[in-house]
Image (cartoon, rainbow, N blue to C red; front, side):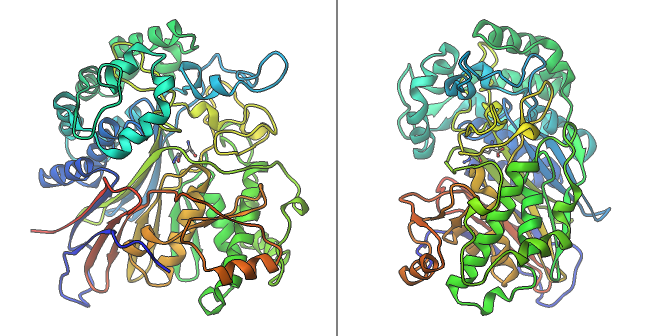
Length: 558
Ligand code: DON
């Protein structure tokens, strides 16, 4: 049963039905904050393409949603280049500083120091987002970086009104924010939580953004900003060096691509685990007629696919420049083998599938989806990891640093913030990128194209899976984003449900098959998606009702 009524759905830009066209009838943007969506539309209006708009949306989110992403963090930007009919993934993931090592977060007795792994400068990887924005402007945009960053600089300078989620997330992190004077100055109002509607001005951040706008990549990674970042990090006990910043480069990666029935799925490649896990799950599910099954059987099969994909994640996946990841993981034959181990009437206990263990949790990150009128598309998920990242701002920079170092496996068997456990494939090494679950995705069909993704830590991949299955069944973004969610990640061996997901009868049927079902009190994820119905020449965009500050917009081409 769908209980969400408040979907921020925009329907519009319908051209003549049936008219086959290679270009969308307008533009569509869906992001986690209205100012970011409006900045994307503003840049498109000024003649920018989807990639310029993506720079504007990303940078405004960095200013107004610093709980979730920012220029002190990183992300993955999946681009579809309409002219070349090609996709590329911009890997702007953070890497470990050169002085980092496998036991960075271990105490002398071998236990893991969770405070150091999550809070303060040691928790921060070298940021990738500034490099990604400069790269996109240089290689794919039509406008100068300066123009695309202008809305973010303006909002950092003039301020934006504090909103409930921003304040609620800060409340959780206030104790850590209070440790760092520059963080207190930038994020709070004289050391207290902002009240709804109070203006948050960030002059230091505006200055740093301006240097990035004027000088491009080097404006952040060299010179004044780099010196201040390193000085601030080292003074607070961190290990960054100028050389670490000077070494940072984005990497252009071939996305994971595979067919599911008549659909072409294009999604994130390593160092995100998302694409490989989605390929495994959808390859397992492909021969089944899910729509014809009872809800319990369908959920059972999807959960068994999740369990197997997350098992492989824990065992095999890490930065592909450091570890050899087996190529069979995405093959149809491998999936057939996994499928053969699934019983239609009975859960497979995770303990029967050997490998390291995991348990889920929440945190923060952000996603946006957009499309321009030429058919260029961007699906981007960006993060500082948990809410407000490390809570540490090096003085004078305005740059809130991430705590993505916790996405490494600090010690085999020791869970990170999302309960995820890994092994040496994802151990800390200098300059290595930590394994991610962020899964910006696109699905191409003859008649319909979907652009989707979400934050949500370890649950990102299963949310994207459920969104895609809903799209395959003919639904639009309003449905994908509001769909009640369920999740299984191999260990703990439990199906987690959102409060309104699955009926009591379905839960009983799943329990009778041997599943342990846990109904959570809270929801998870903030999926923002757009869809182009090519047959009907129609665009739709929707933001997740679980994140009310979001905004979806569709505008007809003039
Ligand atoms: O890269 C990752 O997988 C995590 N750092 C993402 C964190 C996240 O999605 C938190 N969201 N609620």
